[in-house]
Length: 275
Image (tube, rainbow, N blue to C red):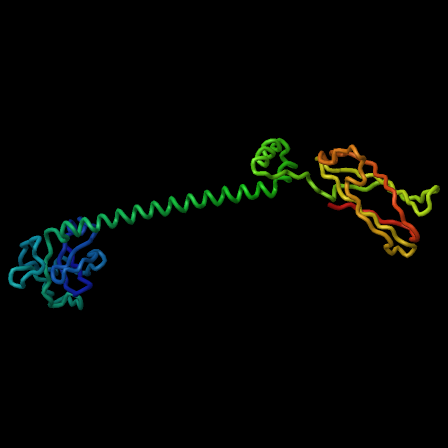
């Protein structure tokens, strides 16, 4: 099947065959201006019956133009009027439309484009994988305490990793699961200005927690704060207590403190825990 294509550079029209179009993916060289273009994108809608080939003699490799006397012409019939074909003499291009070096250039260019495309895909994939690994590692680092709460079997593994990274795994600090029970405050009968405070801390969590700080506020008869102090675990626990091991799940601990109020008038108190 023959087709008519139009050179976008000089508007010269040529007859080409399907075989010629399929040789180099439609790439052809204009026989008039030597411009290389994609013939499949410049096809002219002309029926085969309207094309009159005067001479079928093919071009040689060195030919770049065709004389009007010995080449094919496209003549328009009386019934068909085309502003693209009209009465213009058109050159017939047969034989190789691209020189060997030009064909090699297009093949090399296509190969380079394919190689670059594969490389970019591989690079994007690798970057995506690295970002996912970094995000996962960051999440594990910042959530390592919570991970141990829900997956206690992973604690030995995370501990080993933290040792290599020079980090530690702090004990959980769920303050809402620490309850204050049975608290009381009494004046010492033998020592004036000395108040003795006692209370019980209960860990209602199902896992070990860090010992909290105890905040004790002494108030007057109008419930206005008079004295306030925060006691750390080293202050309210017995001397031989293992603070690093934490408060065991469901455990209770008795707290007893002695405070000197001097001349302050104390009528009540408030107690809370915090980290």
